[in-house]
Image 1 (cartoon, rainbow, N blue to C red):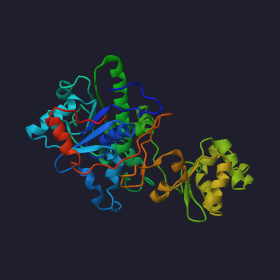
Image 2: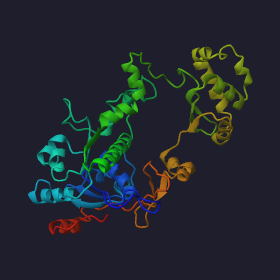
Image 3: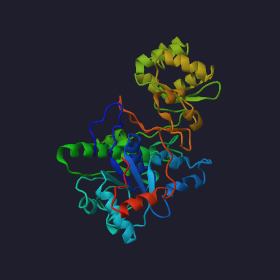
Image 4: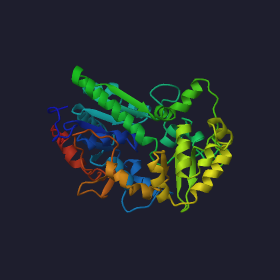
Length: 401
C-alpha cells in the first residue's frame, strides 16, 4: 500500500495493486469492488481467455451486441494473457506478484500446486501479499480439490435449491446467473479488507479465503440453523394453501404480482383490513386471532385474492405504502433496470465515457465522502499484455497506481 490516508478528493484504494488471476464471477467480483474504489487491477487470463467471456453464447442467455457480463464483472481492469505452463510467463507472474498487494485466485487447489500458485509459493516472493482464495467447497475436507459453480454448490448444496420452488410437488428451482457468485465475491472482498487493515499494523500479508459452499449455507443460515437446533422442517406449500395468508403473492387487476410480508400479525392485519376496506374481517371468527387466521389461511388467501383483483397495482402501491405494510412488486429484469428507486440510490450508475455500456449495476458498497471510479471498459484479451510484459522484462513497475 502506498500514499497517505485518503481524503474526500482521493479514491480510498488508490495505490493498492491487485492481480485478478481468477475466472468467471465470484473471485473477479472481489477485484472489481477494489477497482471501483481506485485499486489498479491487472486481469491475468490463460491464452484462450476466461471462459466467462463466452457466457453470452450460452443457450438461453439474453442476446446482445455487447459482452454485458464481461463488462459488468471486469470493468476498470487492465488485461494480460499468460501461459503458466511456460517458464517465462510463470516468471513474469512471479515478478508481478513481488510488487502486488493482493492476489485473487479461484483456480482449483491441484492447479495452484502444479503451477506454484499456492500461498506458500507466492508469500515467499512477497511477505506483504494478501492472498485471496476462492474455492467451491473449501480448503480442506474430502472434496477440497474439486470444482463447482454457484448453481451446483452455493445453490444446490446449501438447501436453497430444495426450498426455493413454488411448492414441494414441483421440481427444484434453478438459480440465475451469478446469484451465488456475486455475494460470495463480496465476502472475499471483505476478507481482503480485513487483511489489509491488519497489514497496516503488522506489515505482513495473510491468506484469506471463502467458498461457495460456505456462502450458500450463510445465505440459508436461518433454516440450516433450525436444523442444527433439531427443529422440524416445514415444507413450502402451494400459493393457494399457504402457512399464512399474510406472507404470500397476490395478483392485481392489471395482472401484476406483488409479494406481501406482514410479520406483525395483529397490527398488520388491522392495517390490511383498512386498506382493502373490509373491517368486518376483524370480527369474523375465522380470522379474529393469529391462530384462527393460520388455521383458515386458505380462506383468507381467497378473500385477499378477490380484494386485490379489484384495483391496478399503481393504486395498490399507494394504498399499501400509506399503511407501511411491507410489499414489493415482482419486477422483470427490464423493469428492475429501469427502477427509479434503484437509480436514485446509485445501484445503477453511469459508466465512463469510453465504456461499451452507458450504465452498469454498481457494486453494493459505498463509503460516505469517498468517490468510486466511473466504470471503464473491461479489457479485450491481452489488451495491455505488451506493455505489461515489456515493463516486467525490463525490470520496471507495470503498475499505474
